[in-house]
Length: 350
Image (cartoon, rainbow, N blue to C red; front, side, top):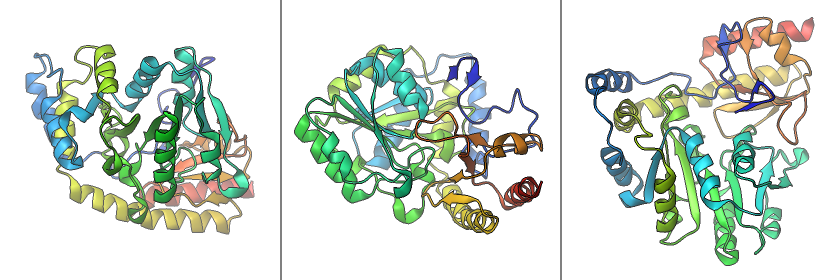
């Protein structure tokens, strides 16, 4: 997303001189060797068009998620599917809790829709609560939620998620649930709605290989929906061959990397605790989220000061509900995290 000539995401290491990138929330261990090998092997068939139906990948995901293959739509990254949903539904009224991922609003705007914002309260740690249920009525065409949310890292609890689903069923409201960071959340906070879906539900659940398997440069995402009309509509507006053969091969290989994810979750749990402890000791306000990134507050100018030292973090000044004193950092390896803490200490003592 580029607004007024400015790149609106993390990971922009191309225009900045960056030694360490804490702005992109990808797997700190990088891409599994098995995935790299699959991409190299698939390159031998790069002269062929890819399977337009992603048959093998959808079948593998079907077995993993216990849903029919026809309930899965693959995309060129999760972002493509967000824009496709906005293009299909063109909702008149969308309820969007904020702060949240900015591409939701950008996708809606691209197809002539302006969301109604539901502010999440800083004093409540930006956690959604039962008050959102009262905002869902028959006038709301679409509710867009993320669990865990970006940039706060807060998951929506299982009980509340189930109540939101029931409420959307009552009002006929479409529910979009972004679970792109689901694979990197704390092990005891994994609350997905995929098992709760029934045929006909007006629900789309988004997942991505990007973050979980360190595949940001590959571009592969998918959604799960038990609504056949939505599946048909998403497929109908998709570009032909939108998921490359290399990406499909990478996705298949990634699904066999369970030990990689176990190792990653253990690293994130340990290193997130380290970052929280070290940052709070230095007087930085840290939101204790459930994902592989942390929201920091109370240090205006931190983004620029760290960038001068070759460290890129995500300024959150352009998020609705946040300010110039807010920033997001990814959880990285211990050596990288130590370098970040040393730089933050230097900034604070300057």
